[in-house]
Length: 108
Image (cartoon, rainbow, N blue to C red; front, side, top):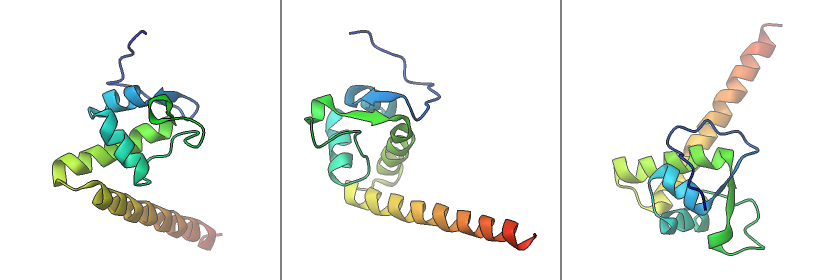
């Protein structure tokens, strides 16, 4: 199997990565990716029908996985703590988007 250089990818949503490609791009082990999936941090495209070695991930998972592994390394967080932090960051992004939307509607 040909190995792809994943160090400087600009990934589109339609691109799918294998569990090994995702781990390589995030500089983490397959076990780390599996732990992130089990905690709900990452979503394989079809986890119900296949086993972990065959999981595929959409392009947006790369950014989320990199963010998760960065939190683990830099802040020494365990996987459940990473899941909580990412959930809170997602909520902040959602609320900021609502605020921006409210401001643009208020100016009309």
